Length: 583
Image 1: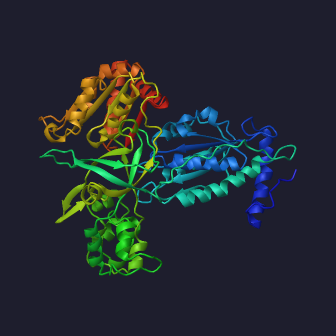
Image 2: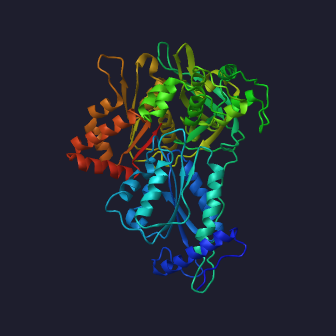
Image 3: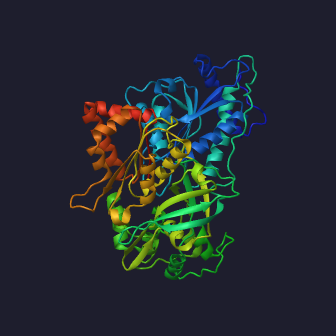
């Protein structure tokens, strides 16, 4: 039987030739595969769309893919990679995977268990599977799109056949992702549309996924109604509480989601860059409609140097120090050299590079939003959303350095000022669906943000489950943010237990993981009672230390070996009872 390719399909002659050969091979495989791929005539074929997502972007793309798949005659299912048992995964016929990469080349939290099973020697063969991978990442980090690259390679190693080559997306992923969807689905549909009687399957109509009109490219101009300093006198930090008015936006969120703020760059830094390069900010660069000053203020990242800029500056200046760290390929040495340096520092190396406005802009990345954990529940704050943000400030080489977005909010958006925002869903980070389930929260510093929202949510729902918070910082006298609120939560019975750890109030430093181990027996008992365990905050140290403490507690108080304790914690992750919101 000759494979059928619709005459109006958007393929070139070469693509049609390749596709005909591809389909011919697929027909044989379709007849030999199980019920997942060989669907009955007239029924909609299955398409499994799996995602690994840390901040919600990959999940959103997966949902968009599913919406488009329905128009191609599929009955798509969408779920996180960790929600799929590998034995069941091996029965899938058509699989599309969308995954982000977390940190320096790591799997996102809801893909870790899947990757652990897939990469094991015991992983099943996948000759009956056809797949495609879309990887989301950031070229500013090492391990760009590494999670997607690893999954793509491993599926091929296990015998699965790639439908289209993997596509890697940088931070501006939307258009690339849309093109991937548009290219991939017709190829899969051409295969799945083949039936013994020559008819094409038609999926049952499904309502389009409702999407907010407010997004990264079109943020909502929210009024900042509250900008309040939480840190007390003598604190080494500047933690602030913000409230944004969402009236009229239609924006919806849940406790656990993130609010994304689109910053405006520091005008002092913009002028310093112009002065250093000797450029006129009133000029409109070729290919643009705004002045150079406007572009640097609103459109480009002007703080963290990327590798393209570093290499171009080195090529033009032959600065001995920069040449050394770049040419030796020593990542650690480069990281050490970059510590505390920004783009202005690089441009001020001797000799100063000569760059035109167009050349300079070509070396910069687009200005990105900053995502902050929401610190409120919509059931408690109506048309308002709250954030808890630490303003980043430090001085080196005689200059004050300021966080791009944190000081934009602190210094340049006063009360009743406007900030552009949009919401990112984080469906994996939610209060327990069971209102009777215990909840254990570990959130030092600004990591308390989502748990303030969780407690508001539990109160609003009348949840009877016990709630336990581990909170800490440096000094109780000046760093105990939301003290009045937490005290009231305890007194009203919403917060069952509150354990505090202020590291610098005594000679021996005490951290949240210290308090966890002090009360390890009770913590383990809460887990045995079906408790959910949450972490929010610093990923580089705190989250790892807390995870290590959790394993030790489970081993000691559960009477388990190190291996069995690790399996216990893994089971918590599988049951979605151990989740993190770390950064």
